[in-house]
Amino acid sequence: MLAVTIIPLTLSLVITLVYTKESIKEQSMSENARLIFQGKTNLVNYLNNINRASIVLYSDPHFLNNLSKSFDDYQAVAEMYTTLQNLQGSLPDIQQVYLHSYLTNQSTLITNTVPRREFRESPYPGTEEADPVKPSTEPPHYAHSYGFPPSLHDDPKQQVFTYYRPIVRIPSTERMAMLAIDLKLDGITAISEQLFHPEDEQFYLLDENGIIIYSGHADEIGKPAADPHLFERMRSDGSGIIDEDGAIRVYEKLDIAFADWTIVKQIPYSVLYRKSNELITINAIIAAVALIVVIVGTLYISIRITRPILRLASYMNQIQTGKLDVDIDVRSRDEIGFLTRRFRQMMDTINNLILRKYKLELANKSNQLEALQAQIDPHFLFNTLQSIGTVALQHDAPRVYSLLSSLADMMRYKMRSGEAMVTLEEELDQLRLYLELQKERFDEQFDFFLEIDPASLSAPMPKMTLQPLVENYFKHGMSTQTGTGRLTVRSWITEDNRVIVEIENNGASIPADRLRQLQEALEIKVDEEHNDREPGTGTPSSIGLQNVLMRLKLYTDDTAGLEIANMQPQGVSIRLNYRRGA
Image (tube, rainbow, N blue to C red; front, top):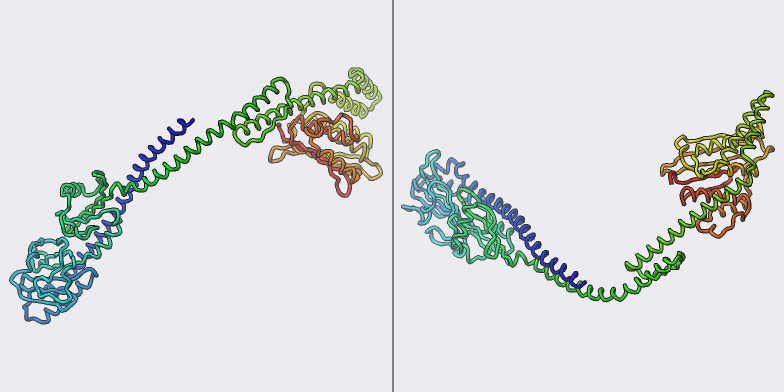
């Protein structure tokens, strides 16, 4: 048992470790790929804003004209200052703007202080290395004043990257000036810091030459990438994931004409699998605790399980000898106790079935005995009734013949042997014959009505169930002094497939005490309370009703019921209900 427990636990830990690691890796790759793509989108928008800000110069026709005006044209100089100052203030990250005009060899520097301007034969060294036709960028470097005297507000330790735009005479490619915009790294830093965790992960923003534009380590900014070969692989692929050397690297290429940069996020395995290792540790602790519990439980079960099994075997041996009423004592709540309780329920069911069969046989024997005692000779009675009917016809009395035929049909129905169950339709036909004879007896002082749902006619019912209930009315409730007697029989099928038969009369009501006794007698469960009751005990009315209910339960289902109640202002209502097709 211990081996069966330890091996699955070990396999579970190994499988959980492998599956968890792979699942975490795939999830991390997917999440970081989406994150880096979003970062790429933000950086592209940021750089495009810089590019759009520089294009503003082309929308100012005075600015392009002022590039060719002399140094002494103060109005042109003032307009140029204004345009460049507007550009310098258009974005918060722009630290300063430098412009050199090739037409007049004039250099201009716009900062937060006083603008500076001077004549130069050539632009500031370094700016000539920028692309002469299209915009480009210079990797991060320390800020300088482009050859102008430094200002007190200048910060020589401030790192910036430079955006270059050549000013050309559109539509030609003649270069009129070179624009250099120094930008602080604050905007790039803000975007990049949202893409990684500095404590655990590494993040790089590289230009097309592998120079680091931004890194989680400030001392790496402006330096070449540590692994040029890996950088070339990333640039050739454009975007993707590299899983090697103890880390995964998610990268995206910006694909901007003036900033062909690459975003790289590096996640070490130690960080990637930290949560899975914690989960494995927790699982290992749980497995160890579970193993201890299993060992203790195994010993406990080994001791506790033997005794109940031996006791259950003892019960089985007693039942095997024929002692079916063994008192099976169950105290435990474990599986053996559950099995023992189910065994006890099975024996109770068997005993009830045996008792039920015995009662059916006893009832059949009693009915047969009563029929034998009541019958004289069926053939003699039928022949005699037929002879009397013939005499009635000879004396022109068809009504007498009809009544004799009804009586003969009733006797034939009662004495049909071998039929414990009939349909409700047959039972109602028998009841109709009986009521017609009673109507003939009382003439205008009695009438009956049948309100029958056709769907209920095929429902099975024990034979001779309804007539005993109707006979009570003529024995105890019918009175010629209270007006015309009225008896109504109704039947229908409920939505839950139960048969309802209701018999109502307007005769004398049952006294309250007597009604309560009848209702209490009917509430006694036949299967539980009548086991030891001898036939014939109790008053005649209660015995008749109880026998009807007992036969209905035995032949249909245990939920069958018989209800009796007084009606207002007078009369009695009896209702039978049982499950159809039980």
